[in-house]
Image (cartoon, rainbow, N blue to C red; front, side, top):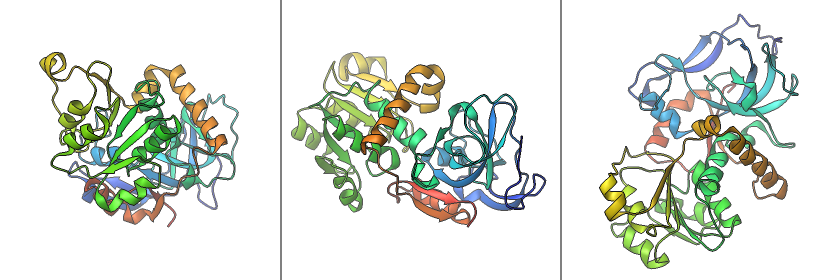
Length: 338
């Protein structure tokens, strides 16, 4: 079942950002004649209200995201918007007109498809843009802290890239669960991170960073490592031996190397990898428990409506370039209708 949207029939082209190469965000191109997708079995057709910008988008533009699309492709994968079409074999309770947040191919466009099994309703009273991050940033932060990080009240938690979308969620959540939070961010972003409740905010580029973290904490219990090569050795060296955990959820600066010799003799810590899509696919019941907890956090006011910076679709390439250069803070989004 499919409906038209404000005069747009299914044959009419739509605005979208298309990645033309593996040379990075500069080769994202705004098109106005992209074919509007049709929902397949188990899918919704979504009129995109706001599309989330994530570092994974940058990785995809360079061909470094495992399993990512091959150029040329309609870019983006996270969005919130209105269900305007329902494909075959969708058994869920959501109806046409419901606003949802989820992931699927081609989010940097006016219309996209989403697997029905992975969408969540936009919380009551929230805009589409305010709901971005629910199934990615917040789910990633929660998975890193709880089922993988095994966070406990009173523990010291180190959060890299604390001014980013996952980082800000992690700081809020870690404080909510009673941890002491050491957050890393560039000096210009310190006020943003302090306002989230971090106990200490340090410049991640400090030459004696590991020594300063160890001085403050005596060793951290949990590290959320999202930077990769540039910070990985520091993360390992400040983690408490044996009981300390390092959850690796990104590699913005490139891949790091860790050997069995390192783990046995130099850094005897627990290292765990996290990719939220893989997590959801491999442990669906555990992922569902995260979503239930996030819904409770929303009801409690711990998870407030997001405040993303929303940009016109045409600015997408520039926004991704700034994200790649670590010149952004917080969540960014694109409006495909402006």
